[in-house]
Image (cartoon, rainbow, N blue to C red):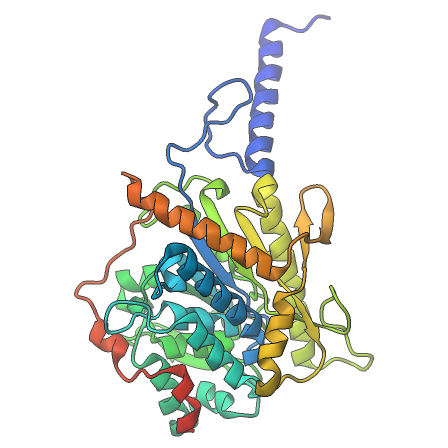
Length: 424
């Protein structure tokens, strides 16, 4: 029996819909309307929203070392290409997300200073991180553990010198920091966009960092600035939220108030930086010990596995633009204790590595570029986008403003990271 004309039309329509969906979700084509047979329409602007995501699979300073070194190199390249000796990383990103130690680094780089500019340079942040290697930020020993538990006034005063009384509102661009709220048994995302809307979602940055870096048996109890929202926070890494790239991408795609023209991942430029996975060799993640692993070791391995899974999912979502619109930096580091004296050499070695990355329909393969080469390529793209915006009649980013400005709060009590250790 011959198929009816209506049946043929339905089959043809179903095929076209499937082809459009396949093109949109597997190959990252933007838009939901067809501009021709099988050709999805492109957005009416050619800019990209720039996203920075920093992993936090652990809470130690060494877990931010790769990111700090990569961002210091990025800032140097941005200054050279833009011809601006005072350019900062935060000038070239529209949103930053960081978990664990990566959350501390993101908060430092996006903290607004008394002049309205980013308070710290990437080089200062690198010095701070490198100088803290060997001191366990979130473990049971060292000044950081005392700080995050809130049990040492001297440690809290020292940490206050880094962030002062600054809150989520006191950042130069949107900041996202995840943690896990034990009180509600659900993830919680600290967000500047929410903080601007209500003081019930505004937290001091020192509390935000405490929440995302909390480790060990005790949770970090933090409250919003008005005291109405209380969080019993566990580490982002422990909660298997070590890679915040997916959270950042979702935030941009659905936040139409601040990113009104974004329609798909084609409209994004994402730099995702890993922590530098511990390994006995190149290319592998943390090896499981032959003995029964401790809860902390098990949490670390789980967090690294989830971070890799998020990376693979995001890379496949970007499809053929992965590598240009989505750049992932990751490295392996020796399974030996790091110290401040060797931090610079370790960071340099990780930047010189080539990481394993996901390729559409090809599994995972060794990258053709080193981490340093990827950083340099991203710097070029960031400067191009900055120059495009100077001549564009349409702003693709409209960041919520704080009224009145809180510069006095942001600058209260802050000092350079280099002076941090001298006050201990």
